[in-house]
Length: 581
Image 1 (cartoon, rainbow, N blue to C red):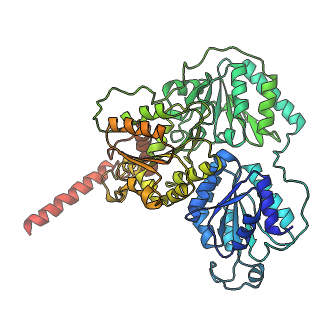
Image 2 (image 1 turned 135 degrees about the vertical axis):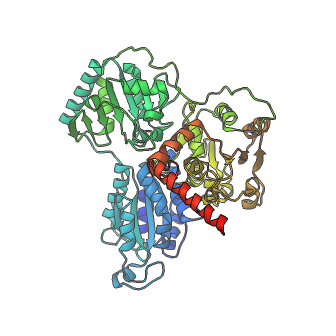
Image 3 (image 1 turned 60 degrees about the horizontal axis):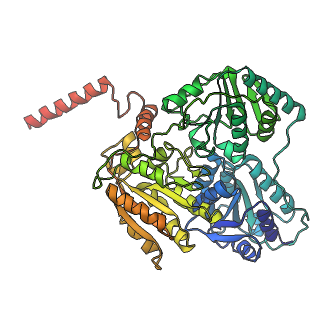
């Protein structure tokens, strides 16, 4: 089989049905083979960074994803999105069309390189943000393609394949059997002992709690977490990156745990527990209210993807799904009173009283958004204002939430929406994105319209980077963005005029817009006019703490008395000089 055809076959066997990317002369021979391959379609993007974000969004709702760029210029254009997928534990296969192997071997000075004869520098860059890499040759193709794809699945992180343009059509011997992406098996005795110890810890606990992070979703164990919660009456909390991973309508789900930034009842439930079982936890600044978590390490059971710890005891060779399944099987049923009557959320479906002509604010917006959400929705939240609001509300059953709170790159959400829609077109998709973020990746709106996708896009127009204003520079020009005519952009990007565009300034206009969106069978673009410094309470709280964390007690928000005194004296001297002049 030809090498490129074999790679296409392997991608299909891993569940990849769409290949995102941007064409370039070094990848065109492979794209010709993709056009001829069964079960996979090339989906073009407006630039390489957007292609990486689209692959990320695709992987969130469809499993493993793939995208293609051309060497050098395309790779480095995409590297921010690849790094983000690495930080967020998202399985993406990055395929780059490399210069022909004869040019690589001879060190020829060709375009898209640094014209220094070094063909390893781009690979070294990509190796920093991927868990496996290979340059494909006729000698290694059959082995390396399988190794790299398996590594992507094993670690749920990006991998990098360089495919030289002159080897794609070389014929090699390939395996007849399909590629199976199976997770590794646990050591049987380690598994037995680990499960026994966890069951014993649960038996001895009077107030246990389960806390999950994004890996619970990435490694497909949320069903087991809820089974354990139901069997043993254990409350469940999520860290912020795992928003939407658990069924938030479950009677055992209590809400988001974020250290000192948690709602009081959730914080008390987690921090007063005498047995905390964590599933894939990573205590980052953004998920813990700047490292304010308080968990008793002596009784902490830390279940990770391929190993675990019980207190100070480390146990390698025990896989996440295996140990959860064993604990569910062996745990004794327990009936416990609910720790919290219902999930704790800052926004409920009941809005505060307001006048119909009242100007739209976050306080009046988000309760109405709660009512608009439906079971099974895919909700995409951009970093900043939108994400802070969305993690503060309870999601309906079977809803998925897509965000990148750990990497936090603004502009991620729109191309991620495109990727998720491409793979999961039967589900309703909603995007919530700020104006500043939107301007970074706005081109991908044309891709959404080109493929006749029908999301509901909420553009939060608050005149710039509100999250940055809350951290520093409330009135500084560097936090401003130009105020585009956002609602006109769907017509600019699609001459068929298929979209419904609306501008909302008041509460009654919002109600009318949501009613129209419910009935529309086309893309709906709703520009929400919001006050510049208005924001969800969670964002205001986090921004102040982050400023202290970033700049310290003598930073620009909190100048020391000495600095203030010197500054005042300097102003007085200058004033006296001006007076004498």
